[in-house]
Amino acid sequence: MRASRRWYVPWRSLVGLVALAVLAGGAWTGRLPVVLALTYGAASALAFAMYGIDKWAARTDRWRTAEQTLHLVGLLGGWPGALLAQDVFRHKSRKAEFQVVFWVFVVVNLVIVAWAVATGHLPAIGHLRR
Image (cartoon, rainbow, N blue to C red; front, side, top):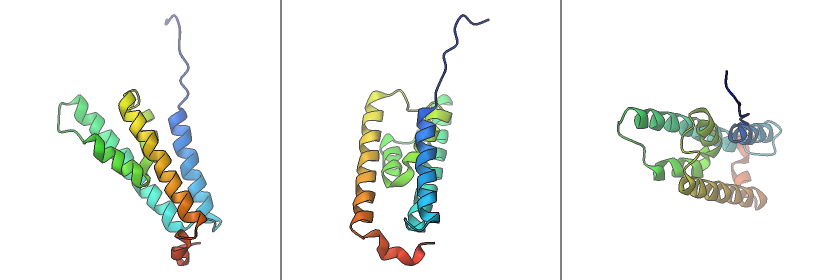
C-alpha cells in the first residue's frame, strides 16, 4: 500500500476543454464565426496528435517534433488541444522554458482573436456564422 497518494487536478485539460466549449458555444449561438471554432478544433486536434507523436518519439528515440513547430500550432489556435495533450501524455508540461513560451503564445493568440472580434475583422466572414 502506498504511504501517500497525491491528488492530481488536470487543470490544463480543464482549461483546454473550457476554451473549446466556449468557442463551440459562441459559434452555436452566432456570437463567433463558425470558422473560428472549426479552426480551433482542427488546430487543437493537430496539436494533440503532434504532442502524442512527439512523446512516442521521445520514448523510442525517434525523430522529434521541433518545439518551434509545437509552438506555432499552438499560436495558430491549437493551444486548447496542446493543453489536453500536455496532461494526457504528460509531455512538455514540466519544462519551464517551453511553458513560458507556450503561455506567451496563448496570450498573443487570445489578444489577436479578441481584437479581431472587437473591431469587426472576423465578421467579414459572417456568412459562415450559424
